[in-house]
Length: 440
Ligand SMILES: Cc1cc2nc3c(=O)[nH]c(=O)nc-3n(C[C@H](O)[C@H](O)[C@H](O)COP(=O)(O)OP(=O)(O)OC[C@H]3O[C@@H](n4cnc5c(N)ncnc54)[C@H](O)[C@@H]3O)c2cc1C
Image 1 (tube, rainbow, N blue to C red):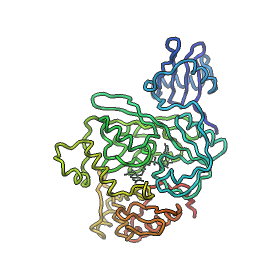
Image 2: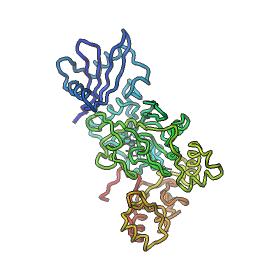
Image 3: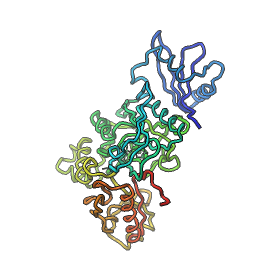
Image 4: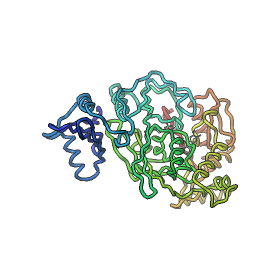
């Protein structure tokens, strides 16, 4: 099946143009004066937009179906408004992106494992994403979506297309009563975005400072650290369907966020390319300082003087002392999730091991510190020449150089096996395994 979207339409007899990005999403170019466009984005969730979009899709008598080239020729006759008025078009490109061959992914992933992608496209706009999707459909090539490569372990060369999402841009949608809504391109660096928000006084993301990777991947596993998760500040995201090219807006409920989980890792896995993420932030968002380590860092300052910037600084300080810097030592952060146990299962574990490190959850379940289990099982700092377990943080597997994905995966399996046989707890990897043949 080839991409169904976008569709290009014009109103017969008038200059108005439409680009239909998905069954609920269209953009309208209305002529104003003799030389300019007024551009409106419509997320068609309610009547009458839904009726209009249906009639546009089916192109009734008053509408012309245009090819992309015909439509673009008409659009270029007038000037577009300044970027900030063109909602829904964070970044636009005019030329098709280059297709590169044989890209070494070692420098594109924080583990730094050598693996080659047969083909590589960097997408700077929605159009580029759709170009890449058509390109790979025509060749029936397997698709690997890449952000910053900080949550993946490559097991083999990638024979298909690696699509690097490089869509940039940050735009304020609304600012009212101390609440700010901002949409950010999926290709923006996560930490840079957190710092930009902080600089502008848009608060709520400080505890997530210094997490590597890009904004587009942040909803994939609902990134979290020091008592805050992405979902706490998430408004919506827009994503393009890999088969149809259709754009869809997902609100928080439809993302089904959980602990290091979202719908994009479960029932919709591999179906969507996230192109931008919108956040709601607050000038006076409460400081999140419940974590002991943050309190410890802040204790030199009087509590009444603590600011959001202090919290961000504390988080960065803790992270840079506790976690290995991927620029110096290959890793993908926590390799395993903290297992979440039901009350009975946890009671059994605690009876046998009263000292087990754990965090009770509001729903009655208990999160057990995977790092504690791994350390107690004797794995902290274990070295296998080219790779091993980090000396300070047992949750992090590290690559000293020259290891393969399979070797690191073997280490992970050995750890999982030992933890299971000693504690009866099944660890699950947090890191995405790319190209792993699970039948092996
Ligand atoms: C030192 C270190 C510390 C870390 N600390 C934390 C932490 O505290 N909390 C935390 O939650 N995580 C942490 N991580 C993990 C990682 O940084 C996050 O998961 C991050 O969001 C991954 O972003 P990325 O752009 O690098 O994603 P990638 O590794 O490139 O991709 C991750 C997954 O998302 C998919 N993907 C990427 N971009 C898109 C897109 N635009 N559309 C659709 N699919 C996409 C990929 O196909 C892949 O399956 C850490 C990692 C490191 C190396």
